[in-house]
Picture 1 (cartoon, rainbow, N blue to C red):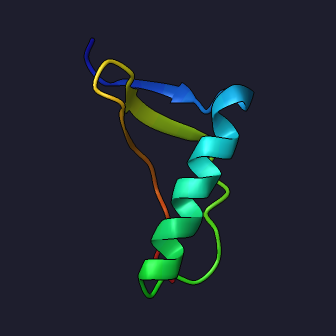
Picture 2 (cartoon, helix red, strand yellow):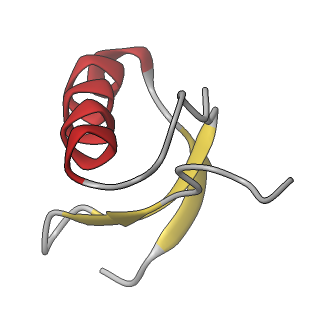
Length: 55
């Protein structure tokens, strides 16, 4: 299955938030994106989303 754009389903939000928190802890990002959508390939278990925007 190719990558598809979609709103993050309620069932996937805890998993996404855990990954987002881990990225923020390991980088210089401050705060959360509160992203509501992502681009996901469920077959390969990969997703792309905005973590933090520029000022």
